[in-house]
Length: 184
Image 1 (cartoon, helix red, strand yellow):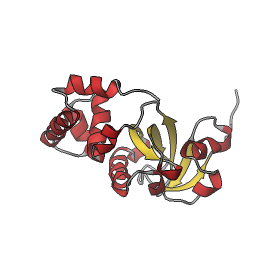
Image 2 (tube, one colour):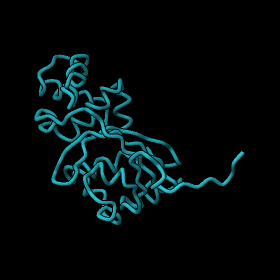
Image 3 (cartoon, helix red, strand yellow):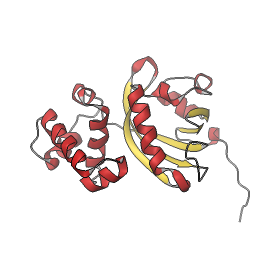
Image 4 (cartoon, rainbow, N blue to C red):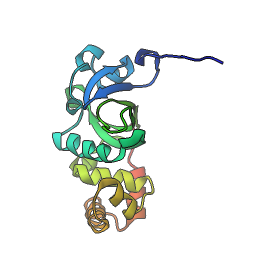
């Protein structure tokens, strides 16, 4: 039995980053390459640099603040922005190291997704994209409301506007539309 194993982020073969108060304190080459940067360009930079808009950065922070306390593990799917404004979908997993402050120190793994960023998904609001990914994960309105800190009726209204904006009649068609987006 081995004890005291220690790894640096550079040893991990998937895009990983360590952040303190949403400032990138360390990342591996895989993480930097995913976003089209050199590692040294991201160290001590705000995560806001990697979001399509500041509103997306703020919304995600509020969601993670709600779900990461106590060392919980949380994940979501979202559109991120790389060098030159390139947009791409990512699945993000994270865990806080501080039970009282989820942003004091957290480790995140970023997994690029083959789902393309289309003109239609870019026209959706950040909140609509957030709800769309949760619907596609099979979550109910009540689950989504709890996760996002919204009322169930607000989530229902968002889902209705979302379905109308992409031209489908119900949640099943919405998930089918989202799943059928062409891959790159």
